[in-house]
Image (tube, rainbow, N blue to C red):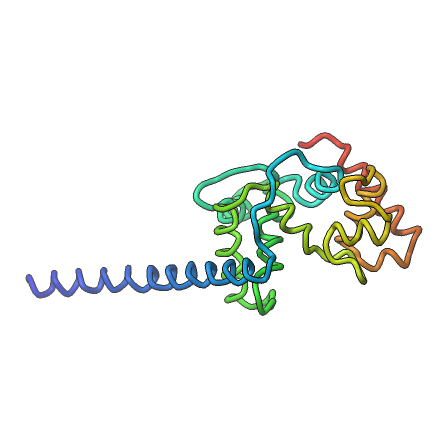
Length: 206
């Protein structure tokens, strides 16, 4: 009887060890991604002060439902759970996931390994930065179209001014380019998309 009990205990311990081992491995892999991003200059500690017009526009256009919300230990996991179980889950993804998408190497959106890596990286980002900081990190290298990588480069190239000086209409136009970088070659459609973003940003949050 004792032998059977010991055997069962060993099986249980082995069953627990395997997932823990994989969890530790994935967590360390996420830390390597962030360490590489720091070496490349993609990660630093931005200010956590009031948002500029362009920052607020992007936050309310792309991350409205997930903005400045918190759940321990990882908001990303909480949003995944709400998406599965809630009748009215948050729309879109947290800014941490969008930034993790840009940082995670070998971008293969259909790969389970890549999806897990992005999840782990997003969780680790949420532990280090708040939403304002994550947004600034995301916008610093976001793609706004040809010759316009990063919000500062885009603001200077398109409007010949720094990003902090953009007005509501200009900010909406840049926000539109995040979803459709090719809009610069279709002025009418670009203006219509920017107007829709302005209306969305101005609308009260639900």
